[in-house]
Length: 170
Image 1 (cartoon, rainbow, N blue to C red):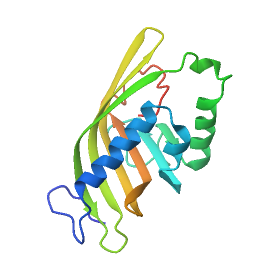
Image 2: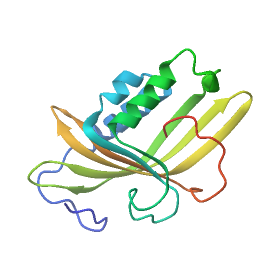
Image 3: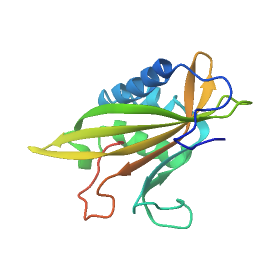
């Protein structure tokens, strides 16, 4: 799969507006805490990865801030929805802003594409607002007239800084 930024993607190119709508929809589901619908956006073996250092090569041989596959993601989502999750009372409120969506590569055979975007997420809880910003890389697999996520890599700008608890998905 081509992932270079300089060259145009090879093969049939998905409509960037469809990709943007998918990313905006994902952000809305996270903000509205619609966990079941957000989980449905993933392929079964999909990976959510938040590296702990700039240019971290992989999540398996290096410590990450977050690395989840389906099972851990489902455990966390179940905790988010549980009324006795006292560490989440009151629940954090978020606002995800997605911009600068770029199609970086398309696999001509499968239609799988690599998309990067920039983001800012505001997290508010107990009179405290935190701001997270960075770059997201999505690996998207075609699914009907939309996509499913095979990978969401969230690279926050201050990944190597001392961080308070990130209570939400970015």
